[in-house]
Image (cartoon, rainbow, N blue to C red; front, top):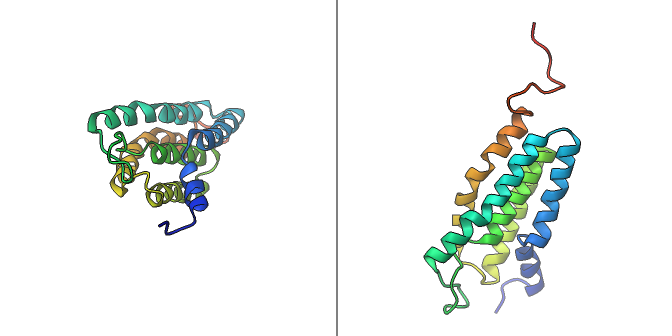
Length: 159
């Protein structure tokens, strides 16, 4: 028996799907490029591209069964959680770091939906978070310092 309405938990878990999370990141990438932050956009795009390169081999290697489908394998780590974290946090870093709490909330809602629906064990979700946190390092550095390696156009000049 579901502890929350099925539609709500499914909608929450779908936030980590590529059809939802990637367009959000895509819009943020376009915005960053438009604002002249090409390097930051590149780092965020590379972080997103690295997600399947990290997650898929681990799923194959561990062959962990799912909570509701013990005969099926490939549930560890959670690809939806990894996608949500990198896409939403990457988008927040590109648009405004003030949006990071919202990105974290969307990631947490995704993870909770996946667990409540029985798609993943809690450890699957935690592993994805730990695995993908380092991927956000370069987008975070680029967001904080603007154009890495070059002074920002709005930075004051030093004599």
